[in-house]
Each structure stands twice: as C-alpha cells, then as structure tokens.
Image 1 (cartoon, rainbow, N blue to C red):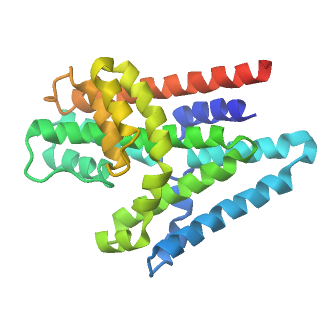
Image 2: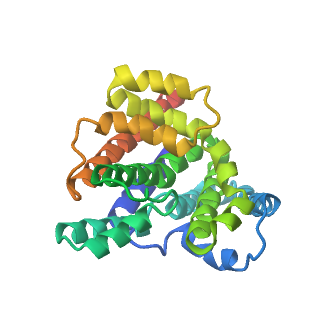
Length: 284
C-alpha cells in the first residue's frame, strides 16, 4: 500500500498541487500563531502530540471497510505532507522575474526560496547563484525526498513518521518567517532536525555522489559518515555541487533550472529504488 500511495501522491502533486491549501504547513499556521513561548521541551511536546494523533487515526481506521478508509487516510496524509506547492509558485515567479531582468522581484523571490539558510551578504554573482541552487536542492530534499524516505521507512506506521517530519518542517519554516533568530534558537527546532535529518541526508547523498563526479563526491560522502557537527544542509549541498560544478554559475535563469533538473533526477532515482525494493520484498 505504501508504494501505491506514494505513486498516487506523486502524480497528484505534480499535476494539481499548486499553492499552499493542500499543505500541512498551511493548516498548522493557526496553531503556531498561538505560541508565544519557545523552548525545546515545548517543540518536542507539540511533535509528540502530532504523531500521537496520527497514530490514533491509523489504529482506529485499521480493518474498516476492507482497508479502504485506511488507504484514503494514507493518501490524504501523503498529499498534505509531500510536495511544495507554494514554493513552486515562488520558484516560477523567480524565473519569470529573472527573465524580465526585474531585479527587485527576483531578489524578493530568491529571499523567499532561501528563507531557512539565507543568502550570503556582499557576495559575488557566482556565490549568489550557487547558494540559490543549494536552497532549491534543500527544498527538494525537505519537501520530497526526506518525507518519502520516512513514509517508506515507517512501514505500517508510515503516516505517523511522515506527519512528524512534516510538522517539524512546518514549525521551522514558520519560525524562520515570523519570529526572530533568537526565538527560533530557543525553540530548538534546528537541533532536532539536525538529528532527524542525519540518516536521510546520507541516503540521498549517495544518489548525488553517484550522479556527479564520483571520484570526488564518494570520498566526501564517506567522510560525512563520521561528521556529526557539519549541518545537514552543507553535507547535502556539498555533494550535489560536485554534479553542478561543470555548469557555469553565470545565468540567473539557467543556473537554478540546472539545480532543479538534478533534483528531479535524484527524486526519480529514489522513487525507482523504493519501487524495486518494495516489489522485491513482496516477491520474497
């Protein structure tokens, strides 16, 4: 059922999910607005509440109507947690503004796309575009690859892990957009996600290493296995940049498109691997 839901959600997201209304991030906004105190225990408490409610729903729907209700629930959870409809709109707005040489508009969209990690100050054009590529690669990981991996790894509890990860992602994004860096640090969300992202980043990093310059990327990937301090963002984007290094970072339209094309390729590889492993497990 996991593979069927994953394929269904992926197809629906690509065809119809434009905007934020079918995103868990948007539905959780009223809850986040009520938070005025920020701490790591409060973050963990909200996280446990999110996965607890989802676990109760999974158990309550088990076995009803020959599993149809459970299938619908899994699909709905997938649609809410996998995909970046609103971010895709920002990306297309950036491309449109950059193609018209509208500096103010494309800079505004670039700031929106790099919301979590920001853009370097007083940087060169090459550094600017390279960091924009990194942001797009991270968005693909955060909204597609990591949720898919947790959904699959959870097995019968896939929706629980998926909602838990999507909740933390939404909380981090909301804090970055609406609260100060100090309050975000007090919430401890970056520390929590640093731990949770450790394994998925290494799994996705293998795909980037193999698709890029393997003779340079693979040693870097092996070194990352014992690296606990470097941010997961830097680990993933460093591996991806080995694949992007051969492309010039000079065009404000083509440079981000190259990164998105690579991200889509890696996403396809991950889905194919998941499908093959699922089929193999079924045959066994």
